[in-house]
Image (cartoon, rainbow, N blue to C red; front, side):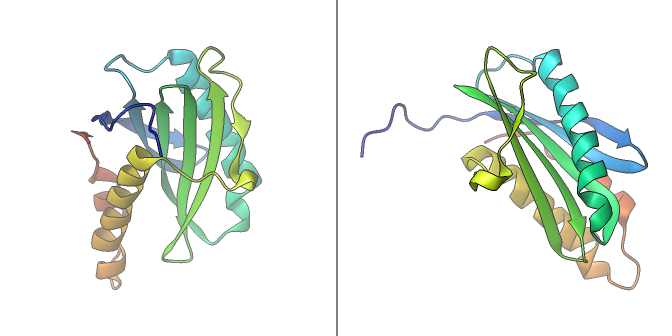
Length: 155
């Protein structure tokens, strides 16, 4: 097995809380370089998140909270839209676009593509936050605490 390059850390940063049609979504950025996210990519991610929530989330027993990851990678852009439903289930939807065409996000979930090593780190953080603030507090789930539990780290 030959790798094109070795592992190097990438910044994962909480950017803001998006409110879309009654939903509250933690927005994160991940970049291959230390550059900021392309605004066209951010705007496109918001559009696909809004569309995905309207198309899919309403069919689930959801809580109106989740997170969006925008990963400006080495060879392309990845966007994932996630929300919690049925107490302990994460719904995860993936989009990809070429680096030079950030607005052309294609829905990739049916292909089986899930996440890269950096994306999984973020998903693991969100899982811990969900367990700590919701599942371990079954008598009084703390959605506000979950939304405040954000990640900003180089991994």
